[in-house]
Length: 260
Length: 260
Image 1: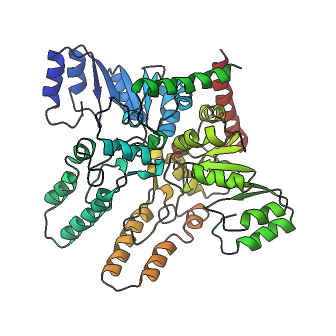
Image 2: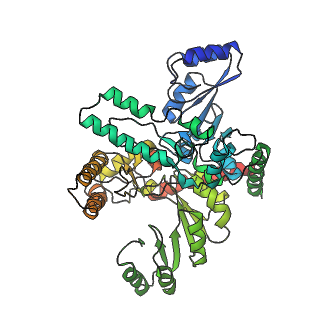
Image 3: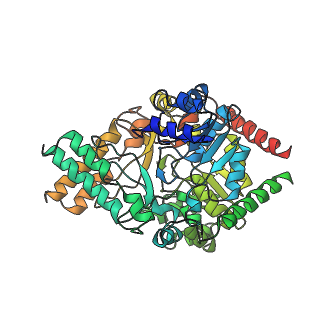
């Protein structure tokens, strides 16, 4: 569930009705009462935390597990990298609740490394986009297979008055148009041709439907091709079992090498 | 030595004259002939490489060691994070030359992790700024001790015509003024009030002397307080020996825990 969803509490009620076993809360500070409401359904609650202070607060509020996700991840991101979050947070919280590390993970050696630092597990998204089982459009998968880490860039805010929550996606025509759009709206603001609320809404709505346009319709130039920096490690379409098998082999080799 | 220095070859000659044992080349693709010139002095050559293809090329050209530095680092940075560079590059090159990993390292567990992945060593900058032995101004050290990882932000380019090489530094008055400056110069360009070359020069010169202004003069609001994301792990002023001792204790504990 996304914390900022306007109908969050109705969605929690749906989870309760269907006896959902685990609820993941993503997207920022959970609104007042939402943690309690989820816990009351009997579900285990897993929450994202981008900073140590918030993590400690969430643990006190009773979350059952945490995800720490670095800025290497695809989609909406915070400012701090996975390895820095892991160093700052795992030594402080990994003994209190299970912590899952996410962002920029593409090889088993890195998984072994985070487990060594105290993580209970990891979360990967980008690496599974090109799974044979994934319904993503062939164009979307091709874009992933072709891309390097440096092609997965965060969207940039160019005006303090027009907030942009950074989203990491493959650079394409729409990324450049988004910058141009911001400059245009900022210009309208300067000229008094548009109200602040309307201007901010125009920025917010720019990406509406853009992920679907890319993933389902296959328009990888004008849609949002959300991808993490691990996209450079995606080389081919292959079954989920092979992707996981490859990661496990690398992780096992790394752990065995240490025992020598 | 910085690859883009206009007098690079004269600087190499100075190194030769003084029989310098190790030369580090930073700042991008080494200009033609520079690698050969350095090797001829008899010095060991260590080069920065932000991508696998360049790393392989540098190894073929005869560099003796490589540094891979992620975007968590302070100062001039590339777009890809340390952990992603490590995953992409170490498995391919760590057996050919010694590779040093840099960017966002603040704890010994992370050092142990990169060594496990094949690194020969690590390079840390941010963590030593507040060493008792460091000549940085008291204001500069105070800013580091106060800052969190998310305060160390990369400078942002807002116009495709005005290139900005991103620099990671603590957010202050000058970061906001730099964005305003770019908008102003872009406006002058739009209005035809300034030539392209002059506009780009104005952007380039904005930060001239800014690091010195912050580190030496202590003006942490209008200077450039270059810092990596590991700045949040800097808690106090302490001797270099204690900083290294702390890292070693953490790394040793991590390695011992694996042997169990």
